[in-house]
Image (cartoon, rainbow, N blue to C red; front, top):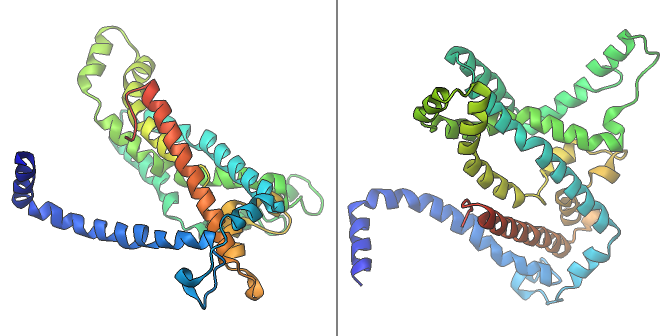
Length: 309
């Protein structure tokens, strides 16, 4: 009881902080927790006229339908391939960039590089895909012009229409757009490294590379571990907007992912929308992400002292 009184006393003393918490708390409740009541659509034969509560229960019928569907293996495989490829290629680059940038002595040059690398992050997805379409067009784009300048006849093969090229274009365009922005958190972690550690390493005869390996990198590990855990929790989430904009009939067998599949079956043309199936697929996706983040968090907790909880 004494602890509870002390807690309420601290609340009264710092009431301004709790007032600021009301807005994000209200946001979480209204937009994150209240909509969770709609999850039951996945277990019902949803009828818009009867509503969520009036629609009849059908159990796991929609999940079975998805698992037996022709698209199940395709969308899950494509989602995992794109996400794992992006994780392997994208995760280390911001860390290496932050270490490299931190080792540059010139403050003015460092800030210039930071600004230039941050800028692509603010390009909208629609504009980014439009830039890709313009540059990689075999007829009017830079790609086609370079091909003809180098002596090619006619037009080169359309890269955007090749199914096998989709994953590479998606991942590396994302790396170009976001690696500078993603490095901010690592730069902040490096800013907290005590100069005394570098001074001690210099006294011991360590050169710049050795200090990066033995001083800077270990200080980044806790931050990198947390970011990796969070990334594993999103491994089944591949951005819907960019995939949908890059998608065409020629590359669809490699570009159809869970998010685009949910969009198409949930908002199907000509009145063929299946809200229940779309909700079931989305719920399946969320459960897999929850399992992955929980398992990986426990693994990192056993291997190190860093974890989310």
